[in-house]
Length: 431
Ligand code: GTR
Image: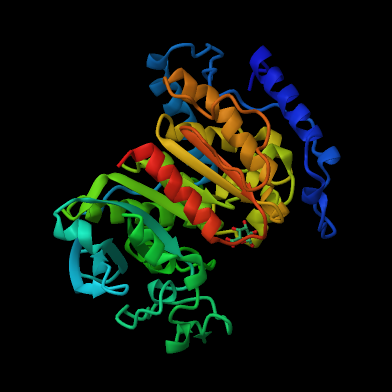
């Protein structure tokens, strides 16, 4: 990519930001990976506002063309191309009740079949505030993926116990890759369902393994069973999970109890990478939230801080498309970086969250993606990230069209995260 005055300025801004790194973020350094800000290589980011042929993008009406260029590169080189909506897609409500979560919520479990023959399906568990449903007020809703089955997010005994393949975990009650009764509510600390309901929001939850089980099997199971094996630029698992979120959105649009114009897509970690890609590929998502998404999510790859492209492609060869391995230990050659992923979502809102101790995910790199995406947001007439260039203090969210926080603690989802997301939704959606 051409080095422009603008990209040089961005680079200088990045270096200045590096000098203000809180020392707490320099702790916990496993051997073999860089956690030292001073060792971040000098890099130049591809400029989201310069066309491939070098033409500067100076007005909003040039953006769709530039956006298409960036989108093609992400499809081709990073996440891979997914098919469209399948013809046989259909939905069945398999269970519902108007008395859930201490009488405050309705519950609905919807099976989404990806094919007419009903061979592959995912379940969506939906809680909505009963008050709003009774008043026939469509509910703004958080659409989310989870790691251990819908039954793991709450101890509500009516949630269908997942029969899908799942990573074995003693702590989560998963034995021989299957959930057991002991896994009910095992992840409840990450899902404050009652607070979400109390604040007037709905929650729609899906087990990500229903869409594509998270192991490298050459793309034979999950929804891949319905398609030819992917080519080098074919959908990896992140693109597949994001595709599943779009199919969930297909359902939400048919449900009059849900406000499909106000759906926030949320995910943590690999599922935060997924929510960003879902937000980029599907304009129906009004707000996109990535929690501790790190490498291949919000974090700038060129910083090679914490998890690197080589490392992620080695540990998880099925997450990205095969072309992405070209950039192992060679991030600078990749024609895109992750700030452009955020820019693809413009002018819609994005909230990026980091955790102070989650150095593997590079909190600073996550923040900088928002900073370097902001010029696109501004070109499109929004306030971007409010002109911020320095990371905010710990536990002090920034909320503009782009939101960001770094909170105390580790790589997980906390009430602080959720409260910030709901504050952001209150602000962006003005109920
Ligand atoms: C880690 C991986 C991260 C992140 C995380 C998760 O092992 O290195 O990129 O995705 O898993 O999803 O929990």
